[in-house]
Length: 126
Image 1 (tube, rainbow, N blue to C red):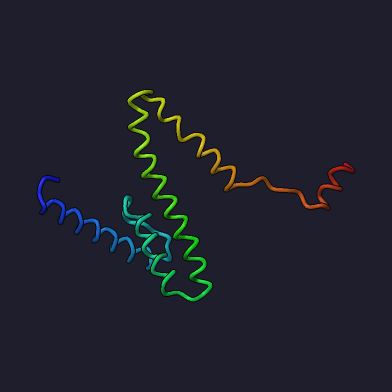
Image 2 (cartoon, helix red, strand yellow; image 1 turned 90 degrees about the vertical axis):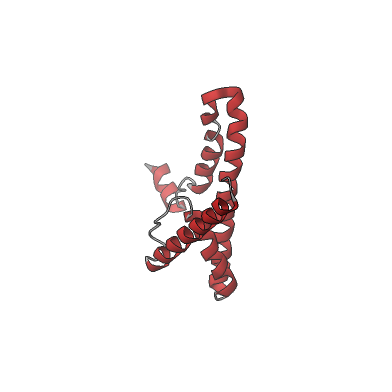
């Protein structure tokens, strides 16, 4: 961006992309995203609006979704800042850096299934 007009154009394009994404998202029950970059930001804006205007249960759920989107966007930004700083020192090994947070995320998101007490006793007898 070299001029003020470039900045204004970028802002208008971002707004239109977000608006398009929001309309399609709402129309499809949040099943479809039509733009890649603005998807998480659109979700954040939609859930912020629901947190302000929704019913008590809807507000609670919307606030949870807002927190998730903020963490997602913040993590993306943090990775975008850290990766170039580390890449100058470790070259392509920088791509190994996301393995630890990814493993932690998978471990937290997908806990092991636990057997019910009746399943445990039947397993012990077998």
